[in-house]
Image 1 (cartoon, rainbow, N blue to C red):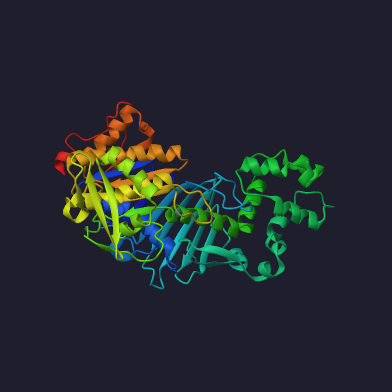
Image 2 (cartoon, rainbow, N blue to C red):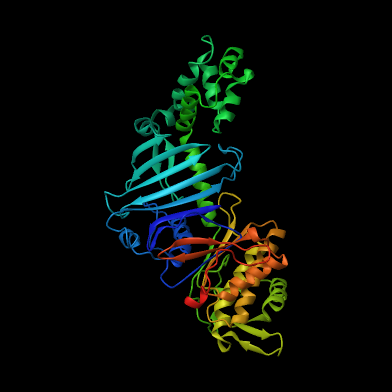
Length: 498
């Protein structure tokens, strides 16, 4: 995921484009909209992991926005009945049959109109790819209400060729229907073949024309023109005619529109798979983690990942090999000044904290509350900087950790260490071939300053970090680090006013 933009959500009228860097931080006063923005990640994660008819699951296992009406922008609630999210990303191929080439840039906009349980509600989904725009509207029953390709209407044709359905995909996907599903691909390619037939030699057989249609892939106008100018594909006669076209030729645009319509199910399926894969690969840590217990009951189940509150931390650590715990401890001692020990007995386990200086060992329930709050954050960071985690359809999506208030109940010096850990984790992940993104919402000046120091000393580069100032009056503004680790466009006394 390269960027997102949010409109009419809670206190956010328009966030503008927010670029997702390896470290992205949201700062601002209470109730400014920071949480609304950062919770878009778990919002779409719970939407991807739940099989619902609606597009956005406003209330789920990670976050609760309330209803659609409660999520509408406070100021525009009466005027605007739409909440929209725009995402920009590059497609990775899940398999060799993928229709779009790997690295294809996509803008996906999801605009929700009305509560998902209302019969009058609908969702607009817009795909922008290779300079073309596909706009599809579906209602709560997943009926395709309209379809436009580059502002030309294809609603009737889409209804004949496709029907929408929902899986664990957030946006609906399409399946071939009617004569196309019964007769195979030829009937689905008939409209594209008719368009091609106008430009090839009149003696070209229908089978050859359908073969040309099946060979065409969506790309920019210049790419499609090159393919259509290939003599071995279309023949000498057609190649000579088509090679004289410009990239803005009306005939070329018609063919491109038909390529999109004919392959719409494959295009939509690949984009929605890649979109959902990003959120499947993300992790969320809530602002208030579970309080420390003296004993944790160990259940005989596999623990692949920490839950958002860290309540299964003991089970997660208990399942680790001794060598892994020692590896974690080497890292914790160096970065945070303490180590952990997991002691299990009679179906229960306890987490002990060992201080570097005194060597004293204490049950986590007897240490400061801040340790229990930051430990799930640290373990999650360590885990995902070493291992990319669960993947969807083998799509190599970035691994994103979304953390609210990582500084909770920590001394300023410890907060600074946490900021340093974030930067070192990004560097470690990169060395392990992992595209790690850490997205935080924070009130901590010490964490922000620690990130700046890491830019200064070269742990990360200035392009690896982005700090967004969220304000009700001024919206969302970007502040970046310069080479010396100083923030540009930073309001004087910003943290003093929080």
